[in-house]
Image (tube, rainbow, N blue to C red; front, side, top):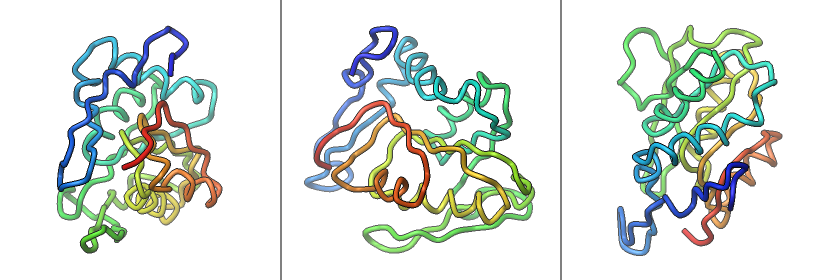
Length: 181
């Protein structure tokens, strides 16, 4: 996919076979983030559709969503809210469980991070099954916030996460797709 500036993001994303287990093709964005032009192109293309959208917070999912979300929040002049794994945030939190293929995990945000009616843009590097993203969206809604959209560098459409978010009425913006898992 060539972007507005002609930079092809997909070729900067490394694929690591059989990680974290046999049969998985891990799509690694750290190679994209390490390239100054790649990082700039990814951030610019993720935020482009939202330049004139009313947003109060960019919400980033641990850990690569922090990197991308923080840069997007800075460029948009908005606040940043981290979604962290359970037990990593100080102070009062609210949590949301989500299902993994091998069990259940929990993500949290600070209880006072998002106010009623705050408009939020969710950011992460990749959407696969959508479990973590849906948990983060549930936290935003439980806080009284509204979700403007969710954006990702990579969509793995065969795993259905982006489709599930769209079915739930969430606008999904992604930069590239990788078929298969």
